[in-house]
Image (tube, rainbow, N blue to C red; front, side, top):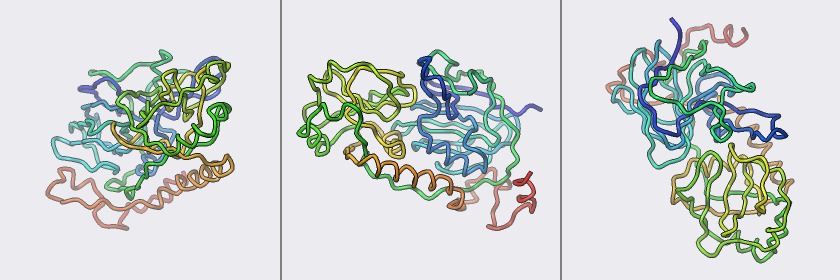
Length: 338
């Protein structure tokens, strides 16, 4: 029998995503892919598979689905509400998804959540990736009645979680080519200002609202359009900053006051509307060091896995879990080396 997910209901904002497409900026196509790349790494660690596997991304949306066979799932990214046949599931953990059981996921406060499948989703690829890029018209959102193929899963372990990562509310920036256009007074005020995450945000960008006046600059009106990337903070004509995300355009004429470090973007992506943030500049050298440290941390996520403690009375899939630490099938090394 073919391994597949059957989608019963899906609200707008539910899409299939992977790490996106590279090499198409010259043709006007941005990377796209999952907005929260840390969530891909966390799901990969929880299921013991590469972070290149395609997943379901829920951009504030909801989905109800079932599986054609017994499968494993992991839930990462912004906290969401998940139930299995009505029983709550812990977010940030791996679980068994029995054949025919109904898994429902809905938002709690906004942000981007992710559903990972053991073996990964295997929809048809376009331009070398499975990701839907809605702004470019590549693929579409997931809809009720869809059947999405799932790859073969060589793993078996579920009931694992990662320690809760305490994320602060400071977004660190490196200067952009237009930072100097704003003047030192404006840059000092930027670092002293509190910003509110606005309800207006999508896969293209997230609006931030300062607690004082905006940051418009007359000099910025004459700049040439040039390449932009996720993390860039553009200042629009009304002085409001927008943090660009994975489906942003490839060029733009709004001045960029700075660029958020990639390792800090998950802080913004997992917070709900109304969350407060501060911006702080770091040097390019310090930013590169922070990114290297984060790459190393993500590579070692699997070493931080912990057993998920749950009440057995609330586990309808009890027999599918590894209940005693250290008890395994005995063939893990053979499978990993295969």
